[in-house]
Length: 180
Image 1 (tube, one colour):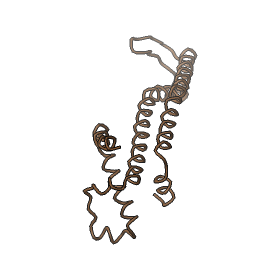
Image 2 (tube, helix red, strand yellow; image 1 turned 90 degrees about the vertical axis):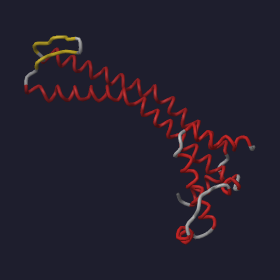
Image 3 (tube, helix red, strand yellow; image 1 turned 30 degrees about the vertical axis):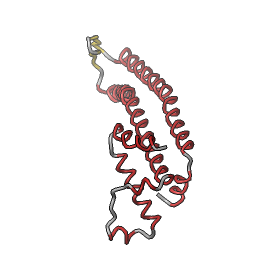
Image 4 (cartoon, helix red, strand yellow; image 1 turned 120 degrees about the horizontal axis):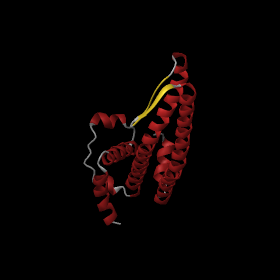
């Protein structure tokens, strides 16, 4: 983290942090249906291409409960495999994309919470006074001044909270909200 980023973060009002987080969540929420519809169209397109390929080149076509069985000439196999591969990719993407968006939502929350906690430590310096963190002499020697030591401790406190489960994070924040 360079000096400019940490200064901007310390000076950012909480309302701005919240607005940025809400915009991130809205962006994800608005883009998921669009992306899913594109993936569905791509999957349907490759499904039609595979059907057309089978109709044109396959022999001994037999429908089964779990798909189709058919034979193709060896020289048509690369073209078949290319279409079939794309169909598999888009089907897989339809399954993993919602999960990826969920991970992105959790990541956006974690980033927001980290910035919020960091901001709270600078708004209420006495919060850092309750920290049980200890700096060793060698760590102190590496830090150039008191502000650098504060930055180090704030980062360690933020990391500590972010490593907790989300419910434990709320437990950690509860007393902060009570003492407004």
